[in-house]
Image (tube, rainbow over all chains, first blue to last red):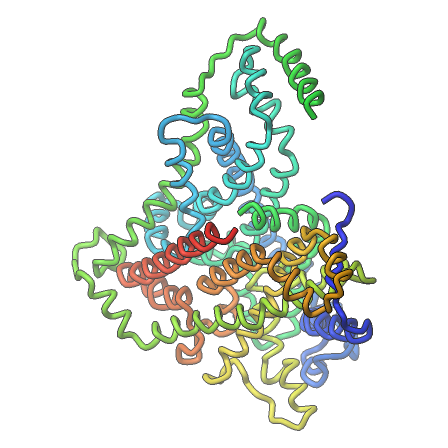
Length: 282
Length: 311
């Protein structure tokens, strides 16, 4: 992708029709989101008669009561701890493994790579019950690690694949030269591979972070104590408690998707790059 | 290229030759493999490979999770599943989700990608807007749509009332709930596929379009003869993601219906959750997991064969 590639697909629609369609779809996408954010500013009675429009009176208290309390921040903190631990461990384990698979060939290395990539093919849901038993037997139920370690394990396949494809583009001559001059593999990894691979590491990191941040099934099975709930579990519990107070639920939902939206705007480049890197290279 | 490479090698050589004096390389190829592979292999084996193998083993037992599995029942769990009404509904729903993803979601995504071509004004903004639902967590998206569909406070009820209908409780209706979920699926994921298509379209050589223009091809001919064939690998990939995602759908359904009313919106994974996990029927739930595994792996292998044939 040098200059922004032009891809004139010769659409013969008139501009008016084209924009009409685009605005219609954009409206359908945005209306639920805007109604949710605005609904958080309404009183329950207002919401009932007027779910679409602006609030008759802006009830800042709905949002304020959530932001002022500890619950919201606790949920975000738990999600953050779990996500950061998952990203750090996934990157460490998969970068080291990917380095070996990219540069060191030995008997059985292809087999080991295929073994690790098996994890790409099926979701954690397929093994969720034995996974629960395993985590329980290891004494990790109701701990961050009980969520983090399986998340790392299930994220390895994707990370190793993306990192290895990138590492392999580092020319073999460079490694040979380094080896001849007495620089070992490990030093080459630290001082050449990792610095050269910052973009792909950022991309993989963002993907792993988002997966962890949004993950629902695994924490649902592993965590039973609401003080360590990540936010998807917390918001479901909140909805259960306040199911009749839609305005509060809507305010809470808006506040919890806010970090994701901010993250998206900040890390957009890496998110979209990661998505298409995984896609095009396969 | 050649000169630059030689320069790079020379500079690296210069950097490393200074290290040679200070330390001897302790690590051989074997050492680096022995040091770098075990963390990944250990974690993967413990938390992915072993549990999947155990799922296959447990699926032959009746077990509540305490002690060791002792009540061997052979294939009875699988037989129960095949006869189970809710599980059959779940399978059908998964097929329905796949069908809607392929027949509605992907064409919509492709249409949006093509409409946003040619660097029209506002293309970047539209792209971002269409991608936002994909960025949201499934749980949040599900709750948002639970509000949309709410019979008392929701947008749909209000819109229906304005048109003179009675306010419908869509998610409480056995005949409507699954369709309501399908709409959310399209809403949530079409932006992802649109991004894939945009990336694919950007890789098509613009000279081809120009040549087609010069040869007098119409817009429709260009779409059918140039764009779509060249987009083949991207479309196959997007089909792959759509099918795999449809098979695994869970998070989105929990906040909406949890598989109800009366199992009408179960999928394989919500079924596994409600009948395996919450009731701690390890053997029975594992059998569902094994079926899920087999379907996913069979699909991945089938996809790979097709891909290697065409790409």
